[in-house]
Length: 599
Image (cartoon, rainbow, N blue to C red):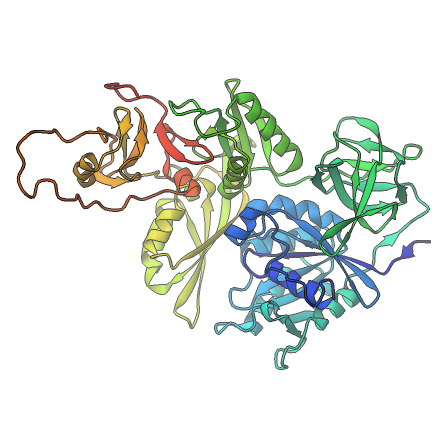
């Protein structure tokens, strides 16, 4: 007979910035996980530096809390579509999910994605309408929109009976009736207890656990994280690791469980628990840890294929090796293939030369996060322009298309529709709100989104919000315009001078300030016209013994436009590359301009 345990394994899924991590904060505080006098930062689950800086969740993380005799394992998942691979594999660890939706924004593209994945896994849902304190909250409309979305995604009728909890996660308050004053998070706890089922486990069956996540410890090495489907496991047990193509034996050296945000060492674990096992260096996501005598191998975790690729290579610029700790192609290869093993939504392949590697992912953001993570570890590299991955389906060349949702002030409708039409976008829907904003939905090729975000923010004066998610592959949409302006390219090495920049400013917008060291072929700005222009940005003022009284007054320059990594990835063309080091981001042409003075 299956045994019912007082355990709830729950994932929190939502669109980016709808308040998942803030909700986890409130649940942890009100469950008594922290001491009364314990100092706890906001968004305590966002433990990575990049997560706290960007305000988004990048990697899924576990925590565990006790509430009225129930042990609740909570998994906080990323909300951005580019990290959807995290969501897909984490749903294999849980028995239900909290679907979080902003009371003002309503369902957005990532909401549809996570709903589809939850329905495919047949997980019960608890609907959380968060941020009910917003002045522009439209709570009742959003509830209707979510249930319409459930029906549109093919949900069974019983999903329409899912409980709805209204929350203000920042204040740690919730209620079952919007008319009532929200008090604490008890309605959320009760909804998890009553609606999400306890795992049904067979303790007498052989051990079986699919690896859904990987961790690392400086003391014991790689950690295999997953939920035990059946059986029990103890320290020093011999187990079988069933991989995609082969099997091998291993020994369980350590078992870790979760208490609050901390991992605690256990001597044994049983089915229904989420645990981390140590002792297997060659294990990867999707493998099954099972009994040697009577193995029970579970179906592997598969995620949707990548849609965008980028070429990584070792740095070959004249400044290579100055600022990085790891600069060789072998070190770069080792790090990239390690990342490919840990993240099933990334694909790493060797390129046309020994020091080139093609990395494919869900989108530009996922790849830029990988680059920034490697920079903080001391890697130095070059990357090319992101390109979409085409497929041949039924003899026809197809490209990825995305569902794009834009939220803008209504005065920008005309210019945004024109921008989308240029990039082969088809408008599907337009919804107006009483706040003077409007929401537009487009069907657009992924190719049309590359290099568009900076233009979009410029057009909308920074007031527009843009979200997209992969929809399907379709026939090629035709030519899509790329960057219109050419580049200002240094024609020799040296130090950029204010005197030279003052003469070049009329030609376009500069990317570097005076005093920056440059080399032949380095891109120093954006030309005002379509063609590239070679410039001498290191030109010195001729010195003579004749001076007017005002000739050496301070030169007033326009502040340079310093591009971030994402902005640089959007800006470059196919014949350009980005040199990235822990201290600098430089762009250059793939071929040198005519050499006058070598650096």
